Image (cartoon, rainbow, N blue to C red):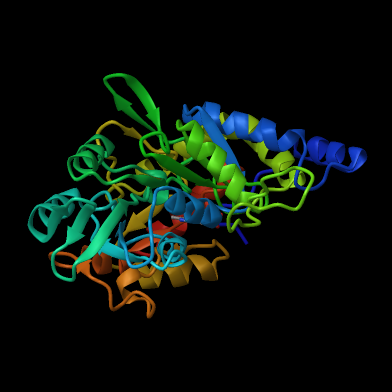
Length: 380
Ligand SMILES: *Cc1c(COP(=O)(O)O)cnc(C)c1O
């Protein structure tokens, strides 16, 4: 089976893991956790990084740190992986779903702007949703498939309405946005940004995540909460309800080795995207995810849009070329179907019914790329 996007462990992974085993530093403390955190902070252009057990736990802690409380809303795009919405629910809050742009598949900022202007009101202690009187506590943009929406515009809106931004940058390690001040990395816009190192992401450590921020206090609190809120290194004194959300040293060792390879991986993903965009241009009704001006995607999962989605999925998977549709929109999942969904003509459904991701592992051969392109062309 040609994998959709498999792990590529061709660097120092083995050496660093062996070092953990040889020295016995396999668990919650060890030098690889610190080194991995430093590497990610540097990559993201942020002052602090705190490693977590997963991207999901990074999102949960970040929302908690941003002050999200039970019964609040967090603004979220309707097209995302379910973990974004779940992390909001863990706090007893609910996602306020916003439809996505039909061309770049990120949160539709026109809809967001209109909704903020018409459907919310400011009170002393924050922004409220007029229809049901619930507080809106934050915005969580999701950098879908390693692209970014118009982040300067989103940040401007968030500021105008006093909303903290928590970036779900779990798919966007290596993605940047060109601004007047220079290139800004994904995860460097919000109060907090979150990455994932799950097995299918552009780099992996088996499973893991990271919170990045420039705020020293928040970084300190993130570490504290992720390690059971232990207030005293010797006595079992804990000063609040903490979590066991830390990343173990063995995983961080793999993560550090992967970070060393990131530039190579991003370059390869961009080559793969370039190849498919040439090879599939003008084939049937195939269209691609539009790149927002200024964005340099990491092209994590190469995804095409066509009315023949179902047939092509069949065809590629039958040929042992792993392909997947885009996630079921959040408003169609039983846990989230009752929530407010801001939309004009449900572009989420339109995209969900038409998009499919095709094999794009960083170690895919050029021959295999040709084979995938051929299989798709023959489907028209
Ligand atoms: C992968 C992913 C997550 C969750 O990350 P894990 O490390 O698997 O917990 C959250 N949001 C999005 C958009 C993702 O793609």
